[in-house]
Image 1 (cartoon, helix red, strand yellow):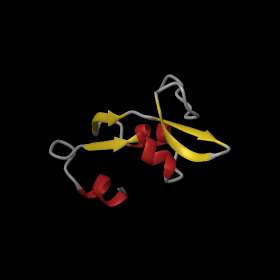
Image 2 (image 1 turned 60 degrees about the vertical axis):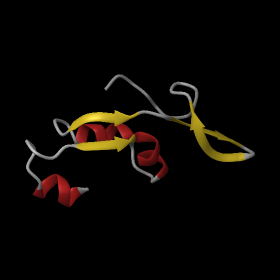
Image 3 (image 1 turned 180 degrees about the vertical axis):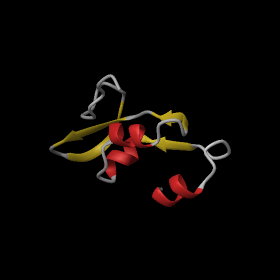
Image 4 (image 1 turned 120 degrees about the vertical axis):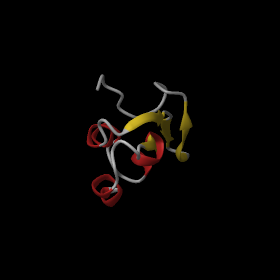
Length: 71
């Protein structure tokens, strides 16, 4: 992503990220949004649920464990 961010034309290339998978990969979704400021036209919102018997699963936004402060 860093190479695409630095080497692509901001007027011609935008990002679409899935915030669930950003967090599943170990990154902070809010940090990612700020890093891509001006290059995001759309984000894919999901929430991540975690329970003792299920490691991680899709959940309704606001029902999982992802931190959704006002950005």
